[in-house]
Image (tube, rainbow, N blue to C red; front, side, top):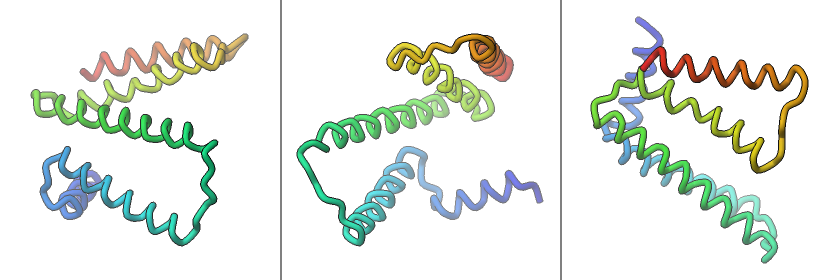
Length: 130
């Protein structure tokens, strides 16, 4: 039996046939439960200076969830996973450009050529499979 088929069957067993976005809701509940237990077992001191970091963490969670919702919508709209996954994995390009823009992480020398070559290959790969 192929590995991908075994993994697919395991996912079906764990998700119990739940539709994708609903499955993610339960994943979020599971993560929340484990993190709450961990917080109770290993409490960290709270300080008002941490509030901006917590707000940023919530914003990251919202952005992550929106990305998942759009991936589910792409499948519902008729896209196949073999097309959708390579396209949304171009998020590497977004991360590279945001790091350059926000953190001024501009590659120099050979690193510049590697980044450009990697960006071109990622883009070509997404185009070729879609």
